[in-house]
Amino acid sequence: MRNLLFLSLFTLLFAACKKQTTTSQSALGSSGSACLIGKWSDSSLPLTLKMSSDFSGDITAGMMVGGLNPLEQMAKVWNDAVGGSKTLITVPFPVTNNSGYSTTSAFRDSEIGIYKSPQWFSNVQTNVIAITQYYGIVTSSAGLGQYVQLTHADIIVNYRDYASDLVMANAIYQVDMDLPTVVLHEMGHLLGLCHESTKPSIMAPYYSTTQRTVQNFDRTRIQDIYINNYISGLGANTNAISVPEGTEVKGMIELHKDGTCAHYENGKKVYEHHLDLSRKPDIAMFKKHK
Ligand SMILES: [Zn+2]
Image 1: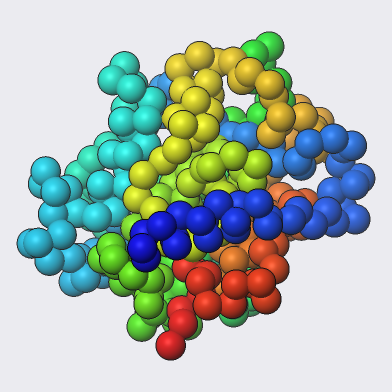
Image 2: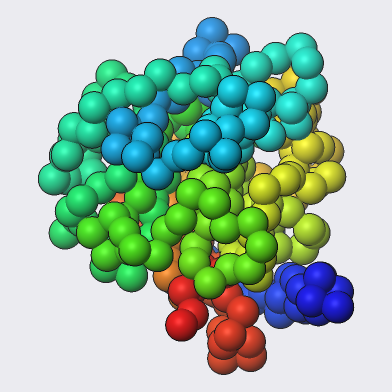
C-alpha cells in the first residue's frame, strides 16, 4: 500500500511541476526550455570522475554491489544507459583528497570530482544541497543543434549545512536525503542533461522517493547525445543562449532544499523549476522531514 501511495504521489508530483521563467530566460529564446544540453567529446570519455576521500567513511561493506560503492553504482547506471559501446564514467572511482576550496571557481582544477564541502560559498545560497558546476564552449552540430562542449565539471555537496541530513543508503523511506539519488541526478547534469518535467525522468527537478534508476526518457536522451549524435524532437535544446558559438560558458545548477533546481550560465539565472511544496509538504525527498 505504501508503495502504491508513493507511486501515485510520484505521478502527481510530476504533473504538479511548474516551470518558472525568468526575465533573463525570456531574453534567451521563445520556446521550450532555456537549457542548452552539454556533451563531453569522445576523446574525453570515459570521464575520470574522482570521489573525495571523505565519502569513504560513509560506505560500509553491505552497501557494495559488484565491487562498487553506492556513488559508483550511480555512475554505472548512466554507463548502462548508453549501452555497451561506450563508457561515460570510469568505475570504480579514483579517490582524491578533498581540496577544501573556499570558492566555486577554485574547483576548476585538473580533476573532475564529487566533493563534500565543509564550507559553503558566498555566491551560492545556504539552502542549496548540492551544485553541479560546469565549463564548456558553446558549439553546434547538425544533429544536436547548439550545445555546450563540456571541458570541466564538478559535483559539490553542501556538508556545512546538510551533513546530518544526507545519507549514503536510504532505500526504504526517505526520512533523510538519499545521497546516491542526489548524485544520480547531478551526474545527469554533469553529463550534459537538462531537466525534464514532462516525462518520467531522473532529471525531474525533484523526487518524492529514493530513485536509483533512470527512466526510458533518460536512456533515450543520453544515447541521443553520446551514441546517435542526434536528438529527436529537440525539445530541450531549442533555445540558443545569447552568446556566440566559441564562447566559453560557466554553468552552475543548484539543487535546493525545497526542491527547486536552478540553472545559471555565466552567473546569470537562466532557468528554474520550482515545486510548490505546499501541496505535499510531507513528501519532498529533498526536504528532510522530522
Ligand atoms: Zn537538477
